[in-house]
Length: 207
Length: 207
DNA sequence: GTCTATACTCTGATAGAC
DNA sequence: GTCTATCAGAGTATAGAC
Image (cartoon, rainbow over all chains, first blue to last red; front, side, top):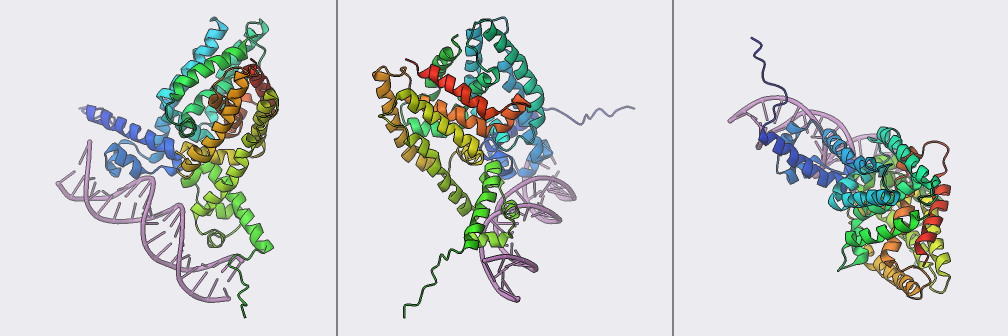
């Protein structure tokens, strides 16, 4: 009796591997085409699975997309969370900028997935933007404002300073084809960006 | 004889008006959904026309999209073209930044249309990015480099300075929902951006 | 767990009446 | 010039065999 051991979510190695293959393929497609532009055919082909098999692992196209967004957001807020109110202002701000730039370099598809979503009005993220994200920005803005009042950094509108970090770092991932087309051959965009943004923010926050 | 006065492109007031209605509606939809995400049904509905009637004015979905992109690009490069090698460096650079910021404020849909296109790999713009745009950036980069060598502005990588202007100004249009969500009520994003970016670039280019 | 076959809807585009 | 009707193909999702 009570032999119902067959849990609904069995997790074999093959299952885990196929779900990862699907996520990987879906990230490619969603980040380039946006939600509506992506098709299950494209995702299934890249994952090396049949379309029905893909829908065995995820119940719908939307479910795959939401899974990717949820995983993305964890990593996305961490660099700002790590900004330490007790640390040295310049080191903390430059450190945050560098962590964001490294995210753009190492996870450009995730950056574009997020950009696509916000560009389209953030239908699946609105709640988060005005909730968790706003709360985090408000918290760290207070830290920046405090530093400014103590004369340790220049007096800048803290939210816009954060926007500047987002805009400048994400640009290298989101507009990568434009950056590479304009620079031409013989450039290392991220190495150059690293140096340039270091200088930019050093000058900007100098009291 | 020679009575063939019926030109293929008759241009009545109604035709002009309907074509404009279609462009207006298509800009709404393409800028929010991207090319593949947009549907003729959505565009036709917003334009107040039937789908076949819409296809009477434009031969295909792609044709509408290309028409919008072509019109956009004219306006898009003008602010950089206007950067005057004979002018005062600081006034020219800040003037360029302000013109770009004004474009974001006054034509956010055009900015998002462009962002969508580049984000998706710029399939219809690649040629322009590596051609006309690169040439223009190279030309103006030489001007900036010259100013730097003369000690009139700081020694900065000129292309990345231009990227910074693009990234910071376009961010307010492309990520508008995020900017508004994070700022909350009682803010005028563009007025604040104007002041902040004036300060940012003033500090940045100071020798 | 994975596949083939298929149901059903949406979408871009055309035909042809008015 | 504008509409109704419609087609062909692509798209999401499901049924059911193996």
